[in-house]
Image (tube, rainbow, N blue to C red; front, side):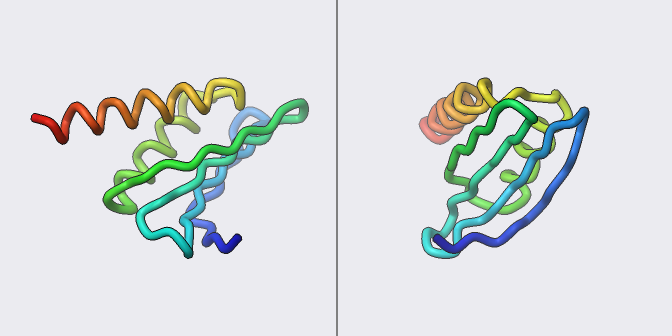
Length: 85
């Protein structure tokens, strides 16, 4: 799989990475790594700035790997509701 690293941050011993998919336009991946856990989730975004906003929100809140999936799912629901309006 082919990805481009967009941003990487380390906060409170956790590593956060935002990557863009090179084979599926408009898709991004967030990876969270701690000493004891790891999580990786993909999501669609209309633009890089929106993907970065979500990434910074996740990193600033010191999100644990086990919470990443729920946050991505909630974000997708909000986007669906906004697009229906």
